[in-house]
Length: 204
Image 1 (cartoon, rainbow, N blue to C red):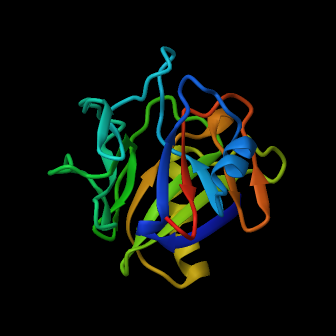
Image 2 (image 1 turned 45 degrees about the vertical axis):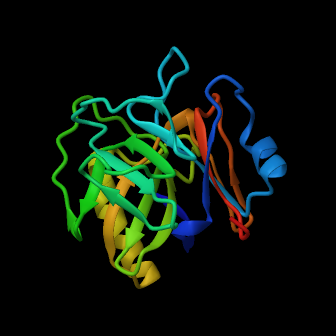
């Protein structure tokens, strides 16, 4: 498994819906001048986000009880952010419901996934000092292939050793053909349209 990563502060992130526009990751990077970019959460065949989705305080989709999409990434108006298992309270600037959660409060979660298939994985993790790490895990032979979901916690432990960090929380984002990761001179683009993007810019 090949690993690509990018680390940044929470306040530097913007969420960009792309459900109906279906713009490419390359064009989003150019338009929004992203220093780094990944896809965000999952979306349906009806081109709507799966689960809660809030952009700049505006709710585009409501919370959906879902055993697989059991985590939330949220950023409040002060730039304070979290990856949590509970529904975010208050009026955050950004909320994305996704999953599964791989790590909560520093502990790897035991995953039992039905029909678990190998695929490229995009993960958002939060370190103990509130640094965010975007991660892409994929196969050297095929960039759309990668580990099974149940194998990801093992790879996250390897990343911790590599980076010299401890992950407090880690959340799965959309993967496979509808995923993208552009940062540090690495450009891993999508095969099918990406529903939404996380864009990092120095001046956010």
